[in-house]
Amino acid sequence: MNRSTTLSIIRVAMLAGVVILGAVALYISKGGIVDPLAEDVLAALRMAFIAVLAGTAIAMFFFRKQRLALGPDDDPTTLNIVGWAIGEATALFGAVILLLSGEITYFLVGVVMMLVSFVFFPVPHE
Figure 1 (cartoon, rainbow, N blue to C red):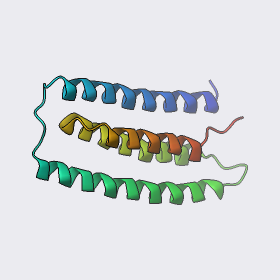
Figure 2 (cartoon, rainbow, N blue to C red):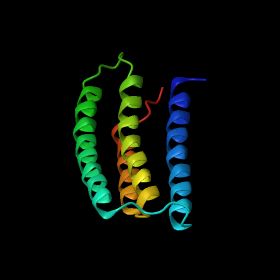
Figure 3 (cartoon, rainbow, N blue to C red):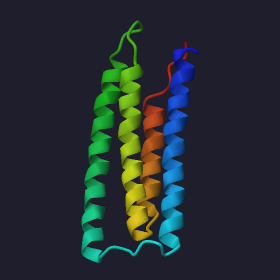
Figure 4 (cartoon, rainbow, N blue to C red):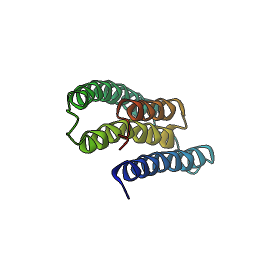
């Protein structure tokens, strides 16, 4: 199995994990299994999400700059996986907010950020 195939499998696995967690969080939050948190706690989580989102954007631009600076003989695998993991972290945090509040907006924003990381850090074709 070549490197491109391996990296593609890693991306699909990361996205599948986020989608499955989001589906479970949606089911649990809409099913009334978990009581929503107090509004002041949710407000703190929302602010933390905004901070994570901003940090994610800054980190992705930083790592993207490093990836673009690589030469043709350099291996971008580590930078790709780090970039994808940064995007995934935002989606996972959005899933936590979905689970605790039932608000899907933060999860969707996180998934978009994860998809942006896939664009910023493409799988190299061999």
